[in-house]
Length: 82
Image (cartoon, rainbow, N blue to C red):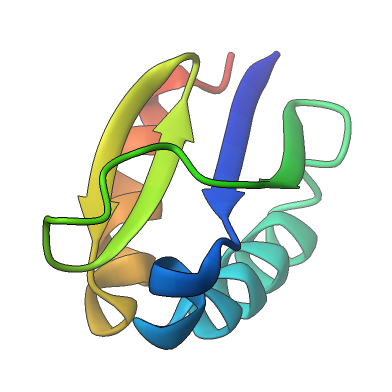
């Protein structure tokens, strides 16, 4: 199971965390991946100085811009789904 977390701390909230969460939820639903992706919100991942929103995939942290969330999911998360 892929563990996918999105930061909802203050900085990430202001940088579009809500949009990324909505995009990821839509893609999980669209692909019927509920049993393959554990998706949850998280508080600060301590990457606030960088642009974008902190997203953790299996413990590895990335910074994702809201407009690139769909591409990030397809290129980073989907390959890990078995």
